[in-house]
Length: 280
Image (cartoon, rainbow, N blue to C red; front, side, top):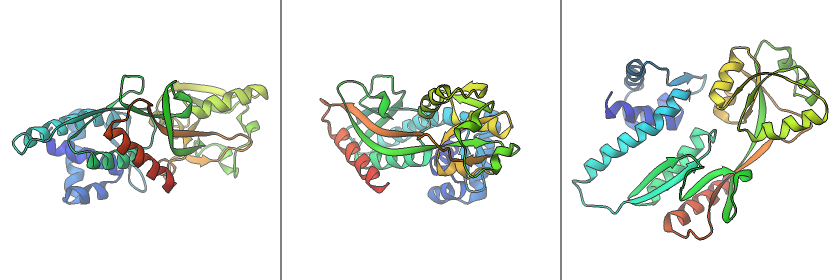
């Protein structure tokens, strides 16, 4: 394993595409694919699931991403130490899971470019940090919340189920439906109480946390799962996605920070988040 392989891995993870990552790294696509395969063989894991358009990171890729980013950043810091010194700006950003790799990577890339000397640390949103990107329901007292994205949810269904023939899914269809519970999940927190009020009882087959594992179980035919309507997810050919009627399953993702925090990085990140929100 070397820094070059890790840099290629980071590019594929953030771009969601082998070809786009190859262009960014200025190498041929076969060379980049070979480097990724060598990295997978050395670690003994699969890092990306190949899709009709692009790739989707696995749970192991999510785990490696943080380590790889830190290692590459450290190497770049060593190189930079022999150049003119730049004052480092440490910034801890708490991130919830399932934010969408492509859009989150774009936001962080722009943030890093605008804050000179930024040393960005991505942490759990429950840890002490300068700012958090969370759902509206996770806001704490004394925090400002600036909306960025409004996400809708869909039902991911195994292709073998007759339910895939329907144009959309009604709440009554959840009766005895094999279902994969994913927590924490805003959509689940809205759907399950509504099913209870209507005395509709799904057949819970699993209780997991990550979207990738949920979709893996859906693909294997274990059951259905609620997932955000992300483009890279809905392009999968091994899972069918349907909208759900009668109940609004949505979440608002935004930037949260203490009112008393008026630092320059916070101001820059806030402006970027506002610009991103205005595009959608």
